Amino acid sequence: MGRGMPSLTPFEREFALGPPSRIVLRPRDLRQWDSSLLVILFRIDQLSLEHGIAVDRSELPQGLARLLEMAESAAENQEVRAVPQPRSWLEGIGVAVINWYKAAGESLDFLGRLSAALFNLLRLRARVRGVDLMEAVQQSGADALPIVSLISYLVGIILAFMGAVQLQPFGAAIYVADLVGIGMVREMGATMTAIIMAGRTGAAFAARLGTMKVTQEIDAFTTMGISPIEFLALPRVLALVLMMPLLCLYSDLLGILGGATIGAGMLGISFSTYWRETIRAVTFGDLTGGLIKATVYGMLIAYAGCLRGFQCGDSSSAVGEAATSAVVSAIVMIVVASGIFAFLFNIFGF
Image (cartoon, rainbow, N blue to C red; front, side):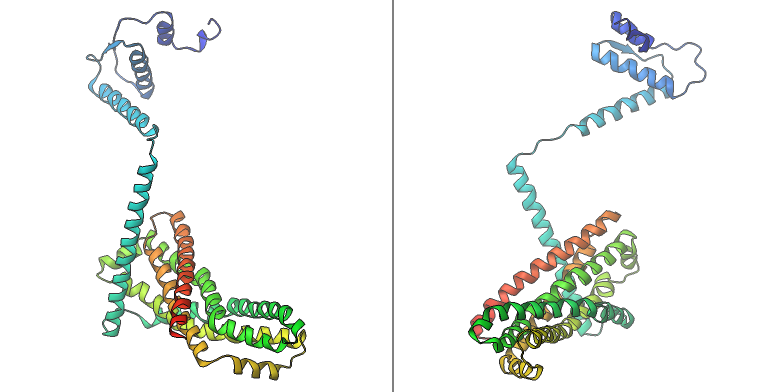
């Protein structure tokens, strides 16, 4: 006790020896004071509260008394915020359902406004600049060719190699061309291109619009009476819808070329024979189905990217979260749409 006593202030020593029954704060000849006096008085008030001692502040200057009350109020609020509020599992389920309901409402609202913007475009009343559309077309089309070329060519090689391993022992190596051609045209070309564009273009849309949301550029458009949906989202949706079928055709061609590489290098099939077998196996219905899928996938990717961009928060970290959410949402919608297409094509014999 004796060793710890020097580190205590005088009034803390008094409280340690024996707390008084009442404290009167009576400053004498107090002309100038700073925050250190407020700290001392606040500490006295805390010790008095702990020991249940009444404190008389009637003789304190009005400004000092007011600051002391504000310090006590801030301390009480901080203590209240620091106490975590336990949440039951039922309340957690309710909060999750409410958040899902709000997110679904925001998604439907954005879909409705985007549909209205497309209708205005058909009536030639939408505010869309041609230069913005051309820029979005370049970003969604020509700039994506290198990565689409690489992935599509490798997917064709992988499909051909897997098919060759299974078919070559039966002397049916020529049917590798059928496998690769039908697989790329009906499913893999559109799906792989869509996944690439979701990770590349969909995330770019969300990041670009999210940054504009953080810098309040979108609010500026609204203030000037310009619809952000028409001016910002509509060119991106149109660009991706127009470019996805073309990229899908390009992906199909590169995938077939990758399969032909395996056929010529591993199976001894000439390019002309491989190409004739591919043309015989792939029908016009297969090609049309793949293009329809690619168009719908492009709409879903653009919708997810623009939606998450407009939903972005007001911080820099929210931009990254919006881009990540756009990619995840787009891929989930692509997978769901692929399953729906498989079901419908089976029903109609497409």
